Every structure is written in C-alpha cells, then in structure tokens.
Image (cartoon, rainbow, N blue to C red; front, side, top):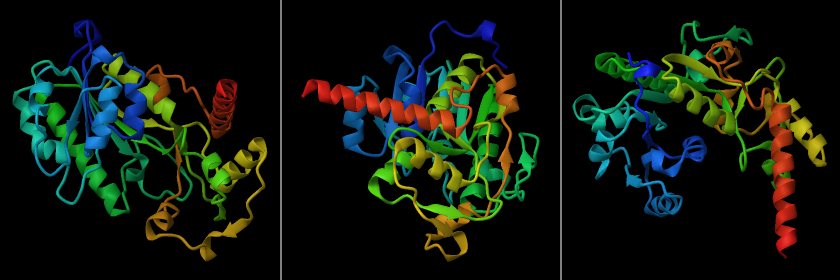
Length: 306
C-alpha cells in the first residue's frame, strides 16, 4: 500500500465518466491537477475543454483514443461509470493499461451505490453488512466492486469503494420538481431513504483521495427520512404549494422507480466520519436550505445585471 508520506507532491487525476457527481468533484480541483475526464459525446467534450479539463471520448464499447497515454501520468483514478451485463467497461477496455502501463498510479476511487445492500426492512446497515443486492443493476455494481478490488489488490494500491445514497444538488432537488409542478408526495408506510448532497460527494472523494484511504465507505447523510417528508419540507421553506399525498400502491410509477421502493434501509456513515470527513450537509434540511439560498443569490445577481 502507498502511505501518505510516500505520496507524490503533485496529484494528477483522471476521471472515467464525467457526469453529475464527477463534475462536482473536478470543480474542487485545480485545472493543472486534471489529466483528463471521459465523456460519451463530442458536445460534452467541448464543454469539458472550455473548463480546462482535457476531454477523452469513451463510450464503453471500445478503448478511448489517448486514454492509455493519459493513464501513464495519472496518480489518482476516479471511476464513475456504471457496469453492464458484460461487466465494467473501464476494466474491459483499459484494465491492461492500468495493470501494466500506469506507473504513477497511487490511488483508485470507485463510485458505487448503497443499493448493493439490498432490502433490510428499514434496519440500519454499515460497511460490515453483507451485500444482498436485489436488482440486476445492483448485482452488476457488486460484481464491478469486486473486480476493482481484485485489480487494486494485484497492483498493491489503495482502493476506496464509495457507496452513494440518493444524490441531490443543484438542478436535481425537490425544488426543481416543485417549480415544474411535477413533485409528488408518495407515501409508503415505514419507507425511508438516505440522501447525499453532491458537494459532499465531491468533498468526501477529495478527502479520501488526499489521505489515500482504502476500503468501503458509505457516503450518505445522517438522517434517513421518508421521501414525502423531504418534499413537504422543500415546499414549506420554498413557499410552494404542498403536493397532495399519493398512496404508493396506487401511484403510476415506472418499473425502475417502483423498484427503488422495494429496498428499505437506514445507511450508517460513521466509517467516513472516522476517516476524518465532516459532512457539509448532515441532513436534507441543511442541503435544501443551501440550494434555496444559492438560487436566491443567483437570481439577485441576474437582476442586478439587468
């Protein structure tokens, strides 16, 4: 394993899958620290380039041009691409590059999901809880976790497997649905979910990478709560009409949306805290208030420019 004292002075990050969470993380880094980030689209590649983040096209079906060379210079790897029926696309197309041609690599972070724990009837789970995935996508995630663990073990590198709860943040919060008139208060007795603000994902990743942490970490908030309570709180503090309560059994949901409600658990985060990370938004209340005030500031700035 690589200790902090052995760490190179300059971190160089490469991100597979520059989506919502990974983009939030890269915004916390200096541009000179970023070796590259992958995307599926040329349009998104242009946006990454404008931010000073070297873009690489990678669709998961073939190796991405230039990625192998970028990995030679990478010290910290963050993987935020979902696996599929045929396994993890990064390992399939660039696993050999990581095994044999990434001499500077010192740490790997793999973004997974608390869905691998499955359903526990509302009971608490932590990193010592045996995974019992129910959905196909969670089975695939668990297999990908194990494949990355095998690679890290072969290379003698620290791997942080980051299991994320439901992600919210700017553009992805109850406020957006309340403004659009699409918010619903689905009520299923006893159902709770954990959540995590995207800024805490970025902060936790930065902390784990900076300390070369290894192991499984639940990156989640302190308060699992009924989803209808979160919508009601957002409506109250935002000044929106309270959406009517809808019985879960009678709700018109997609199969995927309904499957989320088939898993009920409370996810503990003490291991992350013991590793030295302090949540910026310990519950949905702090997170929603931050989103509300940041939007108000944005609107005030736009008015001042008019």
